Image 1 (cartoon, helix red, strand yellow):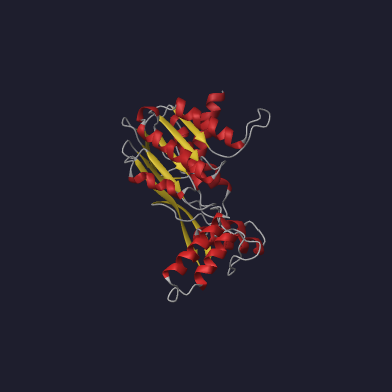
Image 2 (cartoon, rainbow, N blue to C red):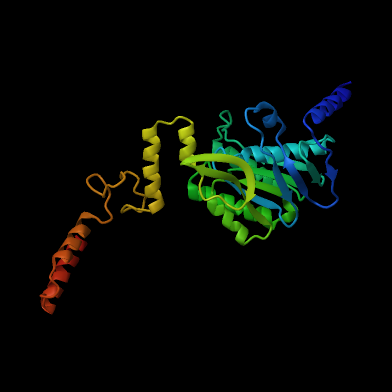
Length: 317
């Protein structure tokens, strides 16, 4: 009775949602035309759901997906997994057309949560799940990775993400098809050296300073994440987002203090003044001032050597 109930429910949903019968392929591939996420499409009816394609094959096994926050990356990953799972269980699928080879396992590394009772941080949980994927995935697996590496420093996270993509590419017998969503835009450069890696991004359009998320997957790579714009949409106070833009500007200019850290405290239009770390220490600044004041046209060779010796002594302290 339970089996009949399940089949009847799948049939009812398939008819109401205009689902199609997927075709099984003997060759490894996932080909989905105009796929949709059934739950998001059903419950967010205030705007039409934007369908998306997915093409994965031995020649294009890994897709690095970039795009803005709120652009639809995570929904796309879950959508592909849902369609593959429905096809594997013999159901029709929410798409215009779908052709898939058998998938033995679906691995996911999505979301961000710690494990309080085990004493595992968010990043530790993330790495444990990534390790399980590397250990247990096969050539017939589907792997979904959502922002792996975000739980640690930027350089550490990017390095781990890059090495993980390299491993999944170079060990085809230990990994199947991979969708890797990330905000590390540098990761898209791996497609230049790994032939089975392709780049895709979530399309956006800027209209009068306002960002419109098109929710469409297109070839290419994103160059911005629009995090500040999303913060504005969430209701963060204007003075906070404006200050965030100033800090972002300092970071993009790569202005560094004497310790090599980005100059974040400086306001727009300010020079490094009191309370700011200067490019040079006090002794170095004094030496520079003396050099600026020196009249090189009137200095004799002996006087120049004497000045140089004095400045050298000052630097030695």
